[in-house]
Image 1 (spheres, one colour):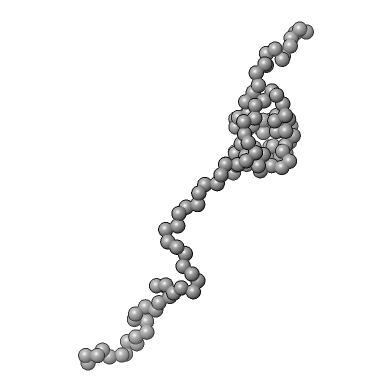
Image 2: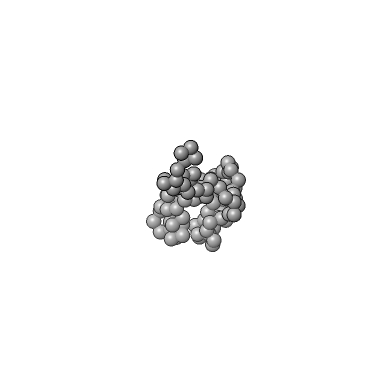
Length: 119
């Protein structure tokens, strides 16, 4: 074991994935920011690839991973574009436009005691 060099066994860089970050966030002793963001990812509120956009400053673990040549960080600091807004089927009416709900019912203004025109 005295001649054991761990660097010889770990020559390749590790790609940072969603799974890697989730395991890291659940590890004991991580920063509260990273653990909190991991909980948000678990609940579906956000994604690991967006951590640079939502957390400023970055947790120290993320900064160290990004600065290290032992890890490959493939995510950019810009989030995915928001989904397009649903298309509106009808144009919105102006507030001063009168519509069918503002018209009185035909029989509300006619008293029942009024006689017809044939009588």
